[in-house]
Image 1 (cartoon, rainbow, N blue to C red):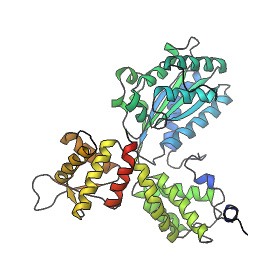
Image 2 (cartoon, rainbow, N blue to C red):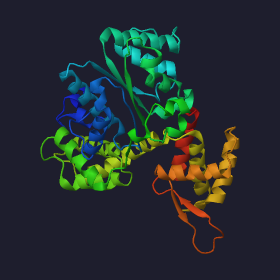
Image 3 (cartoon, rainbow, N blue to C red):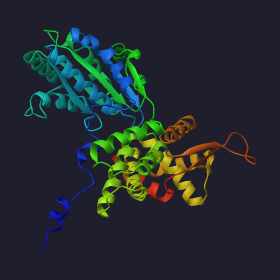
Image 4 (spheres, rainbow, N blue to C red):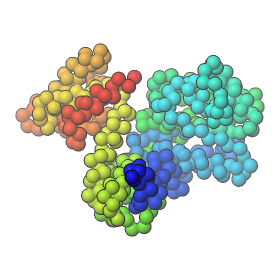
Length: 395
């Protein structure tokens, strides 16, 4: 009797290297982010003279923030070694580690995997970090990814302590540099002391990828991950067209991978547009949930209000007044205090910018400056269900 799992694991595939389709894979070259790499190199050039630097990278989902920071840091560490400079680099996801002590534990685990996960105060952990850097005679670069989660929960004390590390904690002037990554503008979230340590001129914003830029990214991954000639040009163009609505390279790469799996499942020798369409149907729900989890609680409540109003009315559009009244009812259901009208309007604009809704001015027959709201892609009922699943996990 054949082992089904073994058969699948060792079956032939048109994908030659699935690692190249992983979100954590760091290509040697970053299409359409070369200019940002140069800017980072200019910002951090003083590190080679033992002068710490800090930078902020912002941009929406799938614009390459994380891969840019990782490619830069790996290249910087390599270059520093050639100069005889010891440089350590640590990447921390603050959505997983959203307190000062959890971030510091992640940093200390880089040097000592057995470091205890409790029993040390933040100040004691900073002193341990100083001893580690002294022992290694190392300069440290810490990348705090999705840093808004840390700032929202714990404030900016740790960022201040790390940027002033050599002044406050280190007798031997051990140095730490920071790269802060967020979808949001984090400057208003920093206190005055922390702001003074991070230059606004060291802010790099990544725009969404254009359709042609996404085409180049997909083409690169096709060449890296697939056997030659198995992904036809129409399929690459279709993936670029679909993903261009969001400018999201992650979505594009996910589509490519799923299309490859769909082709394998059918024992096809090439990835066709039909495989891409099948991948979109499967991938869209995954990407939607990922994007939903990037919204805060009141953004989610606002989006649920829009979806519920549209679902109950059975219409293509609802207006801002009806949506706001539904928002107040939903807040009451969740024991949340509704925010004022101005904040509600801000939430609408934010979830529009995130790609969930479209806003347009009302036409004839509507009074005032009422805006009409629609859901262009996601069925309203399904969206309500997804939000209800996610809300308990959101602070």
